[in-house]
Length: 530
Image 1 (cartoon, rainbow, N blue to C red):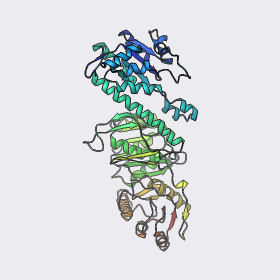
Image 2: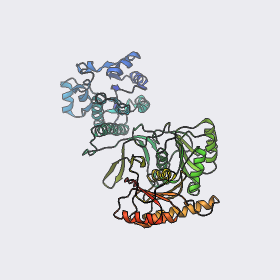
Image 3: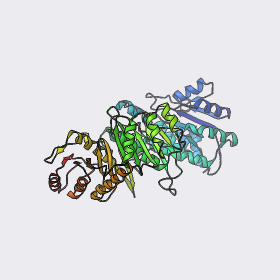
Image 4: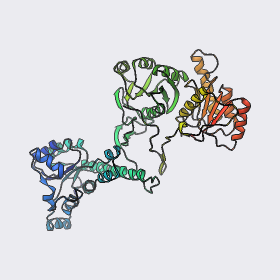
C-alpha cells in the first residue's frame, strides 16, 4: 500500500453534472501536465475551453451507449481505479489488458434531490438516479491509498495547490476526501431510498437511512461540553434550513431548535386571516397571539409571560414591519424569524447587532408530510410529522352547554398552540391570545395550575387585577384522565374546554363539566409532544 507517500497525479478522470469551476480546474490540471479523460458534457466543456482532453470512449474502446447509461462501467476505468499498484499480480493484469492507472477522479452526481424537489414524474426521477458516478466514486475512495477522489468543487483549489507543491496529494488528505466521498454516496442513496419509501407508501422498509449536508458547525451543542453541527436534509419546505440570516451572531444549537419550534407554530395560522406572533423559550411557547396587526399580536403574546420572553425567539407569519420591529427591540431577543422584512424594519433591527434576523421567504405548509427522527440508545425512533390540526378533527360538543362562536374560535386557537407545547400541555386562550401556558409537567393537574399561577403574575405585570385566565377557554393536548385537571382550569376562570377525549373516565369528566356549567368539546385527536 502507498500509505503515507504522495502519489504523483498523472491522469485524471473528470465527469461532473455540476460544472461550476470545472473549466478552470481542468486548465490548472492540464497546465501541471496531467492527462485529462472525460465524459459527455464535461468533455465538451473542457474541449470548448481549448484544453486538451481525451474522451472516455477513446480510453475504453467502447462508445457511450443506452442514452449515456453505460459509459464508465468498464474494466479500463475501474481497473485503473482499483488496482493495487504495489501488487505484482495487479500490475501484471494492468499490463496484460492495457489498463492505465487513474490517479484522480472528479465526479458529482445527477441531481436526484433537485429532481424530486420539483415533483418530477416517476420515469424522470428514475432516469436521474446516477449509476456510473457512484460506482467510480466508491472505487476511487476504496483505493485512496493511490487515488484521489473529489465530489465537491470547493476542494478543487486545494488539490491544485497540492499538486503544484508536491506533484500529488498527501495521504491524510486523500483519506479525508475518501471519507467525504463515501458520505456523499451514502447520502445520495439515502435520498433515493427515502423517495421510494414515500412514493410506494412503504414506510416500514426494513432498512432506512437519513441523510443531510453540512450547513454549519457550531461552537457547541445544547451545552458547552457537547459537539454540534447542523445538517440540511434537502427538503425545500421553508424553515430554518432554508432561511437567510440577514444579521446577528452565528446561530447556536439552541437557537436553531427554538427557531424551528417558533416558525412551525405560527405556520398553523393563515397570514391572510390574521397576524400571528409566537414567542418561544426552550422550544416551548411562552406567548402566542393573533391580531389585526403584528404589533397588536406581539404585545398580546408578550403579555402572556414577559419574564420568560426575555432572551426568547420570536416568529411572525407576516412580513416584519417597522412598527413591530420598534416594539421587539425594547427587550432582549435572541432571534426574529419571519417570511420577509421591509427595509425600515431591517434598519431598526440593526441597532441590536447581536440580534439574529432570519428570513424564510415563505411560510412552511403545516399539512406537509414528512418524517421526524429521534436517536435512542442503539437505534432511531421514526414517525410521520404531526401534520394534522383541530381543523381536521371531529369537533363534538359533549356537554349540555354549547360553546359560543367566540369560544369556538378561541378553542381552536388554543388547541393549535397546544400541539406545539411539551406534554403535559394546558393552554388558556382569550380573544385569540394565550393568557396562560402550562408546559412539560408530569401531571395534567399541575400544568393547569402552573398556567394559572403564571397568568396571575402576568396580570400583575400588566396592571390587571386577578388572573388573565378569567373568562378564557382551555385546551389540553391529551385527555383529562380525571376531572381534577379540568376543574382546576374552571377554577382559573375557563368557561369552555377542548380536549381529545378517549379516557376511561370521560363520562366522569363530562359530568363534572356539566356540574360546573362549562362547555366541553372532544376532538378525537391527541397532540403529545415530547
